[in-house]
Amino acid sequence: MTALPTDLTAWLDATATHLDTSNDAAAQILPRLADAGLFHIGVPVAFGGTGGDLINAVAAITAVSARSLAAGFVFWGHRTFIEYLLQTPNTALRDELLPDLLSGRRAGATGLSNAMKFLSGIEELQIKAQQQADGTLRIDGKLPWVTNLRLGGFDVAAAIQGDGRQPAFVAVLSSDDAGLERSADLDLMAMRSTSTAALKFDNVRIAPDRILHIDAGEWLPKVRPAFLALQCAMSSGLARRALEEATARLNRERDVLTSSVSTLGAALRAAEAALRDGLTAHRFVEYPAQLFRLRIRLAEIAAEALQLELYASGGRAYLSVPGEGFQRRQREAAFLPIITPSIVQLKLALQLHEQPVADQPVAISATA
Image 1: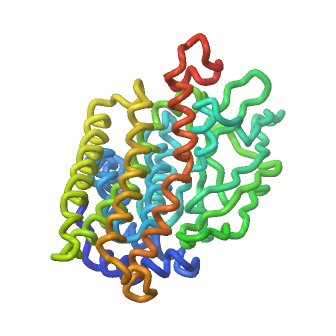
Image 2 (image 1 turned 90 degrees about the vertical axis):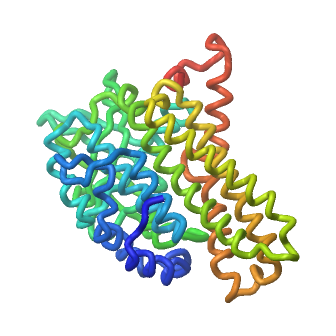
């Protein structure tokens, strides 16, 4: 994991429960992470970053998620949007947006969850485009669940069905666009400071210079490894923290758990190593099923780690004050299986992926 600045660590530890249960500190997360320089990690120096690669960004999200999954979730959405800009051929758009994103002055949101399900043949795109006579594009549709829609201003990436026979494309829509409507924050069970809301697009007009890529089917498989690998970091962080807490509570009465904690820790390290190896070798573009399985396994490990923390803590975990941290982590762990693509959706994609080619729906060929 990345070593976080002590002031950020102290703030996350002091506010983690508040970030989980209330949304009145939501505006503080992005600038806190930005002030720590975390958004520069894995961004080339030529673009204003500190260098490194995606693996370094995964380590940073892991470290934040170990302290607060709400903060880790915001970090994931923002850093994933940054990654889209690093991989877009639209260099002018990258140069325009990247400085405010790296500094935390503006929020970046990945509205491509629907697109990732579309890519696997699970769901149709929910946003449509119509070409206008003046060369602009009219955008209509909705995104029911997007994170990091900061009230102070945000940009969101969305996959949009092209007009007529035109392919789906990926574009950036802005909170400043007329016709874009953000709902109130969703009434979440936990992680309420994540600025998670729904978006509606009603006759939003954008110019072609807002397009990240003209062909979603070509581009999305290339950015999917970053989308999911950065997502995996949330499970890693939560699992690591739960195992640390369980280890700290092992004593003479509960040393029977030592072997289980050690075995699960080894499984976590193996999954993390497989993630790093796959990213280093660039395997996940050609073999996405390997990444799907890692995403599923890491969420399972996090749930198992929370169970071991509960066993090691005993009844104190059920008391409001001494059990506060465990109870928050338990709520956080409940979110990991449902973040899009959910565990069920990933298992469905794997099932379809493993079918004989002749038996597969045409749309599933993109996952091969």
